[in-house]
Length: 335
Ligand code: AOF
Ligand code: ZN
Image (cartoon, rainbow, N blue to C red):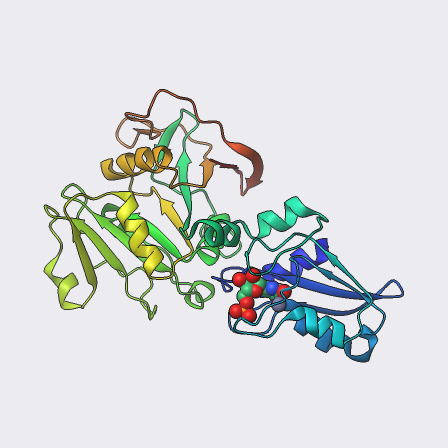
C-alpha cells in the first residue's frame, strides 16, 4: 500500500478534480503490475496496473490506495475491469468519499488520506482546499524571505507550486527578486496566479511570474487600488470588489475549477492579515505550512504573525508534523 501511495504521487498536481491513486498487483509474493492515475479523463490506476500485469492478473491480489470505482464517469468502472481480469482479492487503502462510489476497508488509511487531502476536502465541501504559507524568524516575526533552496527544484516551495492549482499573492510581492522562478519544471504545471491588489499594495508593474504560462493571472482589486494601466492592456482579468475579502475570492476560484490554493504571505501586507482572520473565523483555511528561518529580523522587515482582531478562542491545530529542509524548519498542521 505504501508503494501505491508512492507511485500515485507521480501525478501530484495533475489529477484535480480527481484523486491521486496508485495500484499494485501482486501474485505469489511478486509485483506483476503497477499503475497510477495520471490525470482526470485518463484511465484509472487499476486499468494501468492491469494492463501491465496482463494475464498474470488472474488469481492475483490488487492493492489500491482508493476504493475502486463502480460507476461510469469519464471512464468505465474499475470494479468491472478487476472482475474481467479475474483478480482474486482487492485490498483497499481508503473508502472513496465520493457518494456515488462507497463501501468498507482501511489499510494505511491515514497515509492514503493525507495523499488526497485536497480531493477529500473538495468533493465533500465543493470548496477549494486552502493552505496558508509563511516564513518566520527565530524572534517570531513574519519574514519576506524564503529559506535557502526552497525555490530550487526539489525545494519545499517549488514542490508546493507543483501541488497546488493556484497561488494567492499580494500585489506588493510581485516586484523584483521575490518573483517566482520560471524553471522548466514549473512551466509544465499551470499554476493560476491570483493577485490581490488593495490601495496599499497595488502591483507596481505587470506581474507576470511565469513568462511562458498560457494561463493569465487574475487580479482582485479593491476599488481604491491603483492598477497599472499596462495590466489592462495585456488583457489580464481584473475583478474589482467593493470589499476585498477572502470568501468571494475563493468562490470565484471555485468557479474556475481550482481545487487547491496556496495563500502565500510573501510581501506580507495588511490585507493578508484580514484574510487570515476571516479565513480562520469562517473556516476557509485548512492547512498551515510554516517555515522557521535561522534568522533574527529587525524592525524594518519585522511584521507580527497574523493574529490581529482574532476572536478570543484558541484554535488548536491537528496532525502537526515537522521536518528540516535545507537548514530551515518546516512545520505543518491542519485547522
Ligand atoms: C478509481 N481509481 O485511479 C481513480 C478513481 O470521471 P472518472 O471516470 O475519472 O471518475 C472520477 C471518480 O472516480 C473520482 O471522483 C473518484 O471518485 C474516482 N477516482 N477511482 O477506482 C482511480 N482516480
Ligand atoms: Zn476507477
